[in-house]
Every structure is written in structure tokens, then in C-alpha cells.
Image (cartoon, rainbow, N blue to C red):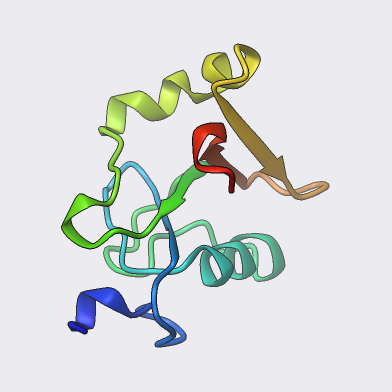
Length: 104
């Protein structure tokens, strides 16, 4: 396994990743959720760019799904059409989005 296959925070093997508009996907969804919802830190672990939401997808090495930055604005409408789901912490400005097709 290469370094890219392990979470940049907890060093566990990546099974699910969470990414913001910056596109970094080196952090597992658990660490991102913990940072965002418990620590209230909305920044990317890699580049420190703040993001109101992140997208969670299955880790698949170079085949891991990516979203272009512009697609993040479409997530609320896609949730309304039930194409993606959202989990929001009560009182938090942090949303975690994932594809329903992935069965996350």
C-alpha cells in the first residue's frame, strides 16, 4: 500500500474519504467528521482551505470519485432529488454529503 492509501490524520487504511472543493482526499471520513463536528474545524487537513461542506465517497485509489469545486453548490439540489444524502450535526455549519448509489 502507498501512503495515499492511508488517512493523513489517523494512518488507518482508507475505505471512505471526505473531500471539499479543494479536492484533497487523503483523509478518512471519520477523521473529517470528528474535526468538523466535534472540533468545529472546517478546514482541509492538507491545504487548510475552509469549506462549508465535504463530499464522502468510497476510497478507490486513483479511481476515487472526485467532485469539481463548482459541483459543491449543486449538492443541496441533488439532495432534494435524493441523488445524494446529507448528515448535519445539530448546530454545526458542517455538512457531510455522500452518494446514495454507494450505500454509505
